Image 1 (cartoon, one colour):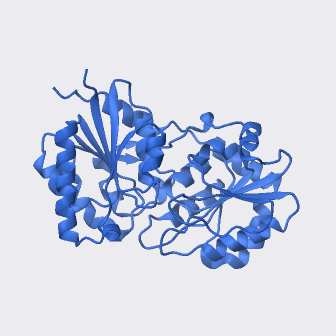
Image 2 (cartoon, helix red, strand yellow):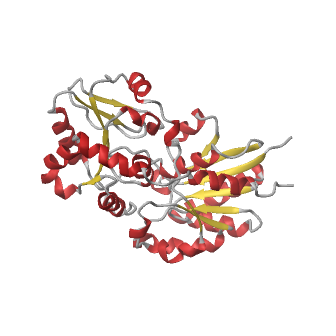
Length: 360
């Protein structure tokens, strides 16, 4: 019997955000269907390790093609894949709707197509909203900081199917503190801080990262653990035996191992840390191509669900780290986070896909 194919299409280059959301949905789709990924993410190996069939293409910035020629090739590649798989649905997760994607959707009007469109957009991305009508349905993953979102998607929010925030790993599926620390080689009696400030874009957080690590390691019995992508060179580690670096996915599964975190405020890391009740100092990546991470971080600060420091506020670092390492402060942050009412939005998206008719 031929399974129902679900074709997941994403962008993301050296990032994992779009891909992680799609994996969250694919992991929860009912049996009897096959999830196939066509992605621009260099993390294709992660999909293979999870047992998914994965096809990879690349962005024109990474293959040297002229934009118009690349869009034409992209359109043809998608059309050939659709003809071969005959999917019952195409699930697209990206901010940009490339010309090749829009033209492909025009050429297969009977295909059920769903755009999982994360909000918190910057105005520079507003033109992509013109392609919304090409999709059968637009699904908006929830944002805890929705009330502060004043980006372009806010005006058309009522035209979407809104679900709660999507996480790849549910907090209840994480390893226990003891099991996670044993797996990572961390002592049970130490204070552990996870530092995740990925420097893949043009907005450099390297100096902040270095200062954070230096000040943390200056304290007795504080361990710093960093996870880096296998897709880009890891940031330089210190000589301290209390500074551990490793490549691991999904890192959130091990997050009970650390007492606190210092992190950028991308969609996935922000919602994992807040919903997972990990006391976190959010250092937003404010690059022009990023989403509105500063808005998320500000929400966490205002709600008492995290701390915040911008790159230009590094002079306040010592005081903020004092708060992050204070037991009472962390307990207060964790308690507020635990009070958030949440169910995984990936479940609602998966159920919607399950209910779609099979391809004859």
